[in-house]
Length: 160
Length: 307
Image (cartoon, rainbow over all chains, first blue to last red; front, side, top):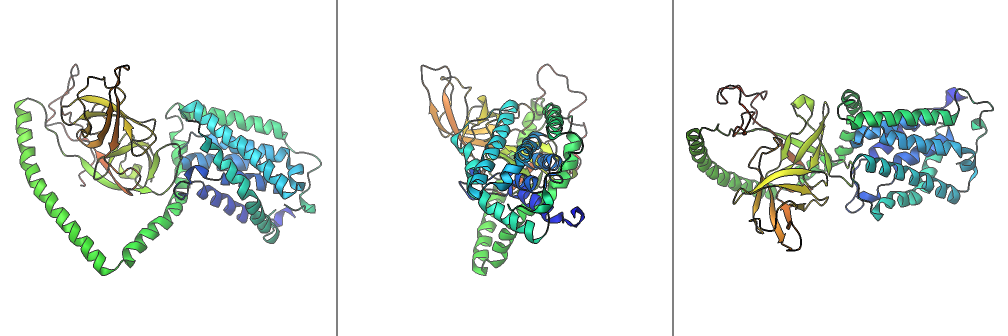
């Protein structure tokens, strides 16, 4: 059972999400970068909590810290909190209709964005602007698409 | 997400509960942040991880390199020829200016020798490429493709053809991170080229603007003045253009004038920047410090001549 589950599509999705976190965005869209990695963490944590749980989220968060030049542990902590919430409400998220699921994931990403902003504020000066909410809004739009894509991969590639 | 019979919740949890694990991870992360915030404790960890994520930076950058390469190899011959002609004229003009520079430099060295201060020497320069990667939209940071292996060091100055771009903040094995002079957390010692008036230029978060908040209303500064790096603070070599003053607002009700300047370097357009290695011979020995040995004969501490 568990032995037949493939791991590479999940790893690949994490790596792609990590790359998308630093890919240059079109002009004027830089502030609206969706929280790719947070969404990926939520999906796989709900799909296969025993493999892609806290530790996995933490490790990829650490890679993101290095990639973005942030303070080590910032994204690691925020992403493990994301995984924690997703795992806590896992049974409910799984059976939610898609719109309800989207709202829940958006709320989780809002917590994530707040944690990042908070740690930024503790370590350096930050300006709080309304644009800070754009990534959260982007999640609202993108979750149904991303969840559909991952769901397809999950069914056809037998990953989790 | 659809329900599958295989992934139901296990009846009995193994190991510590979710909450306990979260707590452990949170404590560990906070410890990590505290250690990292106090500079230098985790440098080796970060460098090792940076090598691991370097491929991601390169892959993200790849489409942009490919696009510029395709643009070059697919552009038509006529355009290349005309571009070539323009560049040739540019070189001619610059070489003519350089000839004058040579005599001026010799004269400068002579005068400085008369005044008993050591000569300014030309700096070693290497071209680095900015990796196309957005690090944080609220900070002006960039990643460059030169690192420890190319002798890049922390605090190193980064310039382009028109002026100062920023300085290196973190060095990994193959790449480095730099802060632009427009980052809100960046300050740069400058002087007015016209009269040598010294002050500090602060970044504003806007790539087309830096501020000079520490000049009194009576300061002799006008729109159009060129600001050059003063070399104080030791990070930047002296004499590179930084910005041009755009607006001076003297409000008698306030102690300091509001001065805005526009960086001369194109901070968000260039892909190529120059890294500068300063010679460690002091230009003018600062007061109150003793210079060990004769500055003229002390060996240059940089590892070689390249540019």
